[in-house]
Image 1: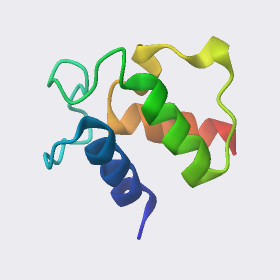
Image 2: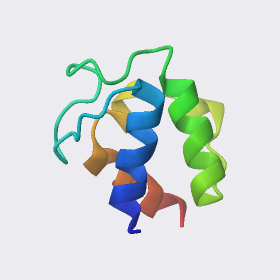
Image 3: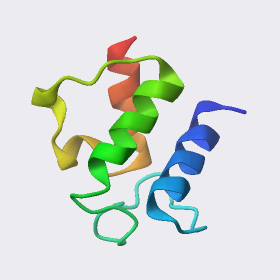
Length: 77
């Protein structure tokens, strides 16, 4: 399974919705994520991708779309 598919799976699990968001669709404006779901998303990403997200990066804007999440992951490698 590729990274984008894994991200979609994580988003669906955290949001408890089967919706498949578009790459540039806002996860927050679409209602898939909210401020309470962001820590769950980060925790799942840390576990799945073996990264550590510092508290200073816990900004919803960085994780607003799948494309931005992928850019963030690229910057961590």
